[in-house]
Length: 345
Image: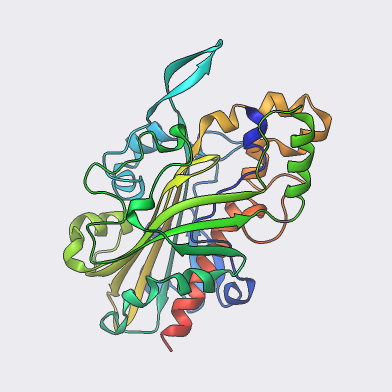
């Protein structure tokens, strides 16, 4: 079971385009919400991903889901798959029989803030709710429209607990598309997959690609709780809209993912828009608990899941998913910021 998770990382809005990412630089800070917006510089993204000494696990720099929910309830409300989301109970094979156990999760949460040289009223978020926008981020990930009737988990475990109790996925919002996506893993990771598959002695083979289903939507001010969103961003300014992508079914390693970008008036300049973007990924704890199994197999020693996830493995490479979550998140935000900035000119 542990080999199945070794080499798989989740794509959120797809991998990154290096060309567009080079337009912005990243400034790492402890808490971007404590940075005065007036101090934001053109072409700079202030960024925080909870990977400092405050993280609950110094090796993985990830938060236990329940600790995150308790300490950051506003984040949990907006960045979990839906506000009432809880770690689900799933069927697991225990001593040869199926038992119902709580599926524990770890959270990776990244926050970023930058400004656009464009008045909020001149930004049309609906233009980004397209497959073309996703494809522009990186052509190496393929996207195709997904009919609501075709939505479904890749396996029973993947779907457990991820159905939205407030509405069916890909319905109930005015500006929305439903997407089926696939990403072929890059760099050394396919070689690792080949090694794992050879060692499995006829067992289930590991795929060299990631499949996921998601919805991408644009939210108007009327769709958002102004006070609560301002609490999330830490910025006391009118919320003019948001872009949101929810990953509700993923075939491996991740339970869910969310990208949430909030657009607000710049308090000091009516011709600027402040964007605060969040990336949240729910990672199955069972993936990280497989560490001992990897360390005892020499050819897999560099595929310890926590190391791969956090970009600390010799199998990590590039600037996108295969680089690990911290590198990936920074480049993802830089890419999106670059697209938005060019469109604001």
